[in-house]
Length: 217
Image (tube, rainbow, N blue to C red):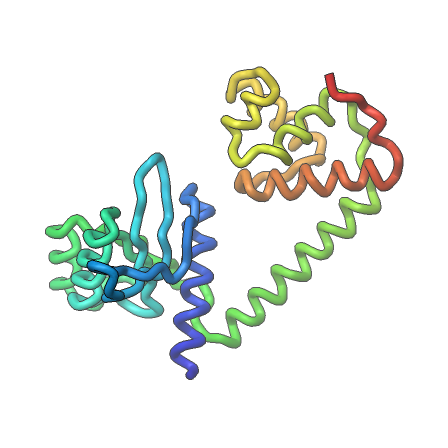
């Protein structure tokens, strides 16, 4: 049971890490079937730059058997094999992964590995998220109509390209406007997903306080 919890925790950490690296997680624990018969399962299916990845997550080091499993499952799903693990168990695993084209993301040793450490990390993350939520809902910053327009586009779009298109500007122009919002402390640095959350909370704060009142063009 304990090893199962460690693996589940590693899977959650891997999914979060992939999203931070720009991957889009499309599914978790995806079944692998051949002629309608289930033959396996892939921990995560992700996408980046138009490429689909079948991701295997290892709580420990990656061995030869794990490399083979990742390669076969990915081929059956017509995806590129990717493994998230804490390094290689030996040189044979590293050589085989390179030969088969299995990409490996090595988890830093600083990441939590025990259920207790994961629990504490999650608890701290939740507390920080709640603190940011309360702060943004009860302390609305002064914003111009142009600021609100940017926040609305970011909150509604799945990526920065979509947000720029909604505003009718280039990605570089939007990045400059986001940089201004960051310098003024309205938005923080981080992934686009985090920007969306911050933009949505700021807009909610304005609406709750009756400060929005900015008609869309």
